[in-house]
Amino acid sequence: MSPRSALVNEELRRRSKERLLHAAVELVGERGYEATTLGDIADRAGSARGLVSYYFPGKRQLVQSAVHRLMHRTLEEALEREPRTGDGRERMARAIDAILGLARERPVLMRQHMAGLLQAEGFLPCPEQRRLGELLSDTVARHGSDNVEAGYPMLRALLMGAVYAAVMPGAPMPVPVLRAELFARYGLDWESGVPPDTGAPGGTCAEDRTDTARFFATEPEAQSK
View 1: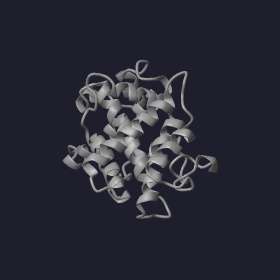
View 2 (view 1 turned 180 degrees about the vertical axis):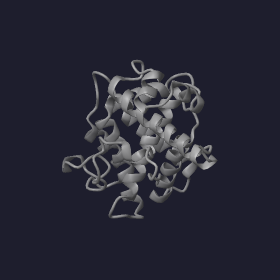
View 3 (view 1 turned 30 degrees about the vertical axis):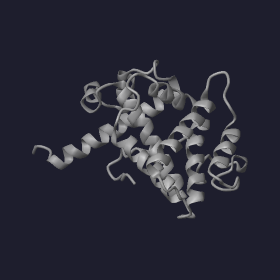
View 4 (view 1 turned 135 degrees about the vertical axis):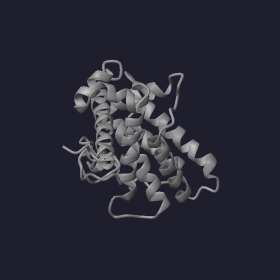
């Protein structure tokens, strides 16, 4: 039996990493961060436990990468859904709805993510977080900001604050109230994006947002956007 080619090995490693990211999102969303172990994630992914430490320095890095993947792919999907648009106000509305939609639909996961960001390590740089930043920066630029370097951190801070308020245990603020504040801040019409009273999943009119498998390329033919 001939040894596997380098390309085959690379593909197997890629799929293993994708399965770990997907499993982390699922398990932390179901059980919370503290109740989820690296062993649990490896078992859910069908991977050897040693592979987790091969790809990620620790659980915090794995979970942050996984949640940032979910966030940037959710945002990307919302921005590019049909009908596609280059209108900066509509794209800002879609971005806000996409992130607030995650807070509404995955409160446990997003609460754990916010708590992790408040740890001493804070943001842990990774490709997923950088891609999320690129999408938000582009959204700020298309909205008409003449200073994206200042506008992007402000949008990020406002979205993080809104998510925190939406998932705060015991005293969550209603997402429509938070949406109204953000829409007023950016001069957006309530009918833009995906208004919460339409019954459509937050930030997108397309697929079932409770199924995140499409955001993780775990199959041989699956291709990332």
